[in-house]
Structure formats: structure tokens, C-alpha cells
Image 1 (cartoon, one colour):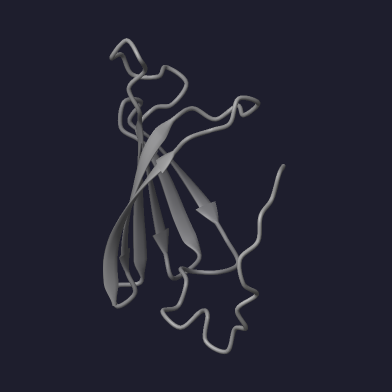
Image 2 (cartoon, one colour):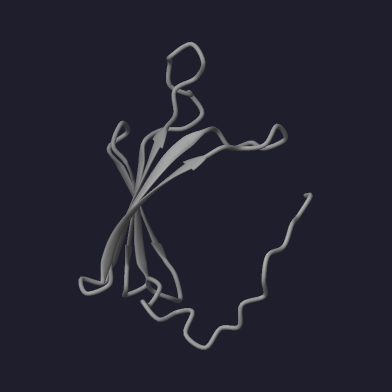
Length: 102
């Protein structure tokens, strides 16, 4: 009941978000997600200045901790839910493919 997933964030032209790579470490048995967000390099090879490396530790207790290593800053946040259960889609009905043009 654990996995690692890597995703690239590619914002559209109107987005305030910067390109970044996100790595999620999910471990339901330990009751935790660790999400690491790394700024992507720009065309000239430098890192995007808008995005700092961020770690998001999410616990099954509803507590999350946002840590920015370069600033040595940690911000705790309380949420009314914990991490996703492994069977969160159990009983769901597939809606089929769809397309959005937002």
C-alpha cells in the first residue's frame, strides 16, 4: 500500500504557476504522504525563481507540514481529512472520456 509517483507541472500561458516536478511518496500503512516540489529549469538552464523547493508532509491525522528547506521554514496546517484511502474509488462509476477547453 505504498507507491511513488512523479509528475511534471506544465502551466498554461495564463497561469501564475511555474513549471515544476512533483514527486509523491504515498504510504497508507504509515499514514503519510510526502510531496516534494522542485522548480524546473528554464530554457537558459537556470531554475525558475518563482518556485522554491517545497516539501509537504501530509499525515492521516489531518495534520500537514509545509517545509521550505532554503528558508528553513515549516508551516503546520490542519485539515479535516487525512490522506486518501487505498479504496477511495471503490463503488465509483466511470464517466468515460471527456474534454475541457478552459
